[in-house]
Length: 421
Image: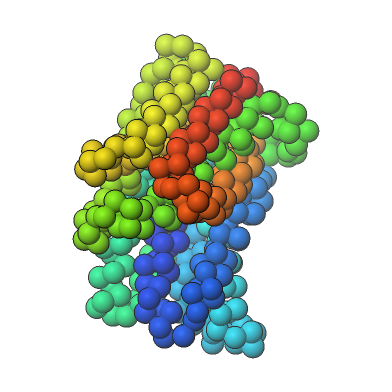
């Protein structure tokens, strides 16, 4: 179950990176200006930012399995349709640029459900003693995707043209959607592959099966929105995630340019260092999940989650600051890559906490938090380049470190042990 959700998470990132990787040939074929390309690329983010909450709510209301499978098939279909967007009915009347933008927007709508619904599935399937580790593994898909996407997409583009990665990824995604629908169940009790001993581990109590599937399914009835938005932990999670996603989006957007133009790294070496933050993700995120679960056993839910979040956030901020002021390129870039790894690791603790504080509406809570994270990601490229052009790149990274510390300060108001229900 965790591996399937991790695969889906990785697939979403490969899909969203594909157009940026093939942008040159794509732009040359349709003679788009840089401004038009910018709007087409940003159309995905617009759809992605505003549909986290509906996706999470649908999972809470109707079950994560069906919503996740439907979302995968939806965004995979629009990934494949990117190849013929200007020829689609109705869209052919809007012109090529609008056609691509609309398809990318609809693709973003589908992908927006992946994280909150995947987190909902992890909450249903993972017991309190393994929740952070399992959640961190599903988020490790981001790191794996960041490593393989440039190589996979570039080679396919060279061999078969820019449309081939979109078709291949669309087909893979549709098959993955059907696999999830066939293999997954909303609750472990519904899955014939799960035995009574495993149910006991997941429930965290003995004997297992004290709560029937019927009773669990009945909890979908109504969402306690008033309780959700009156809980200080929810607002603090929203602020923390906004401030945590802000610095990590620098690695998604400006990091390559920073390497080449500021640090003077060659293009070939920049490609290597550009994947270093994602490599750090693969190592740091599952390690931090394991560490968080052990901390919870020792210090309790509130103290354990808070301690591991603070340690990850603090290390990330410190390394961002020190890396930006280190003269030696290798030493500086190692520090910045590890800073990104700590950032990803802390993000996994935030997603785990969404499930800690509300198992019934963890999809909606994750969606609310993810929305604010997307807003932080949207602000990051604009604010970063504004600071960099006026005050220098060191100050831009210093500001990102300061924002990271604000994310840690928000944890003063987060209590993972205080359930909404």
